[in-house]
Image 1 (cartoon, one colour):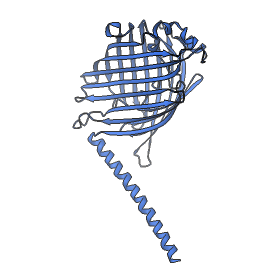
Image 2 (tube, rainbow, N blue to C red):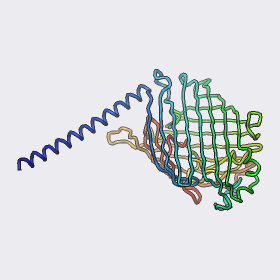
Image 3 (cartoon, rainbow, N blue to C red):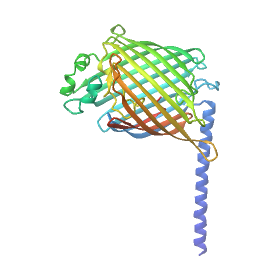
Image 4 (cartoon, one colour):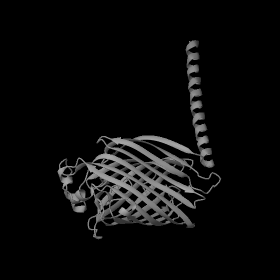
Length: 379
């Protein structure tokens, strides 16, 4: 009997010691992380997760989110960040994306970039709302394989607090192969598929009063950008693009409980290739639609999103949150926006680094839906 009691006591002490060790390890990890955050040191978070989008099917993606301060002595400077995602899907698609957002010289200079690579079986419905809504997805009408590469570096100079001026370079390449008869007969595909390379230069003006660029709780963001693409820059097509992006963030209750809205328009002019048409259904606008199904020279959308951060019983902010959104958008030519697509969704947020979230979103559109796994907010 004594041996049994002694054995139970030993098990109990071992369990307590293990629990205490686990607690101490977690506390030490959190303390080291807090010190890194306060000192502006480099932080990196690896993640792997599933997703589903109408154009990719089921996918598995892995990636990293890293952040740091370019000047650790500047306490007011925002943390720069780099998110990278690499994945593959059940359709046979391979995709890579990278997005650095960096702040330099006491925020006098900002340097950002978007990089995309996709080699994927895809569907092309043609240009315009009527084609997108009337063409049925099939191996004979819409199927083809698409290679898309884009690199879009941007630089901004702050000439007065909250006001920025800058330039952009856009290098993009879209080429289709194994086209179904319906795609091969499309006039835009026939005209531009063998002219896949585009090079553009542009200027932009930006007003930015957001508290944190990658996850704002309050402030305004307004961007007006003009891009000029041409053979004289080394591309194969001549056209222009105007971008207008307006966002507002309002703190409603506690910090992290925010009403955010965005209105954006993209207007292309000239000999615009099918791959460079304005498109809806990306992970950053009307989430839940097939990316590229709705395309035309012009695009407008508006979206409102409530972002709720949960708080602990002791009043401290937790790392968990939820979002709800509703929006609508349209594509057209000659500014004749007649048909508007509905969009609603909900999502979960996990703060993996200071003010930087893992984003899991479920979006619903007109006869379509999608589940998205990304770093940082949609806008």
